[in-house]
Length: 297
Image 1 (cartoon, rainbow, N blue to C red):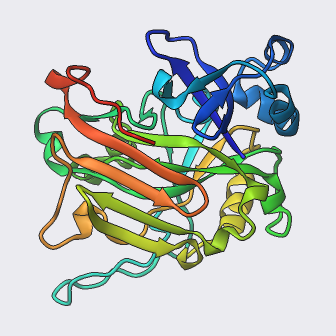
Image 2 (tube, rainbow, N blue to C red):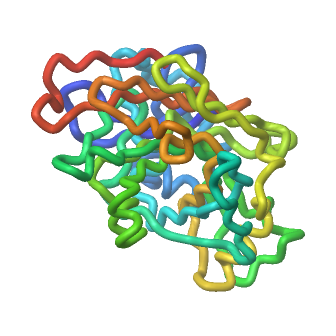
């Protein structure tokens, strides 16, 4: 089942609910009074109760809402880098595969929701603005020192991320290159873990202006999901609602020959089996919010 966070058009107050047949059903007021956000629902292990609470309640069409990242108030967004084998031109020396898991984080204000505008970084930074389609795990049951054998049981669900990256700044500082305002996106919703029987069988496909630029199976990860969760939980106490982006397959703009970075007006689509498609357009700052057209779900 799909759970989403959203706002109504013209209203900035975040809401959440269940998506059924192209509509978003909101839970009853009694349920909302206990669980103010989807993160609170996840933390209370109340996703099934949310489903029941939305029976017969108010519904909005997807055209009436603006979808937010599924957990817009996530405490942490942790990302794995270099987690897929990359293909390099024959005239370039292939770097060695990483021996250890590489991690970085996304700050608040970095990610926009489905159909929202990706902000083209100003000035020279925008010349190396790149895309990266990724599968994201949303933690349901927190913990420290989680074993690989138990790791999947700690996942509430999955969603999609575009890990927007400014490559030239990333060379100076990974943190800076990964955290330009509104440079990445997440959504369109969360699909619960039990709706994906075998996550290793799902595929990631990224399309730029209709051209397929990334296509891979989750099975191709160098460090699988269980290992990522185990590793991260040895450094911090994972909390419900934390999001873990699991890395991007080969085909990002900086790895192509010639390079293909994002430009104003580009249409980016990231599709993952059994979840859906995250869609965004790139927009320069001077045009942000003007003549905005909602992209279809």
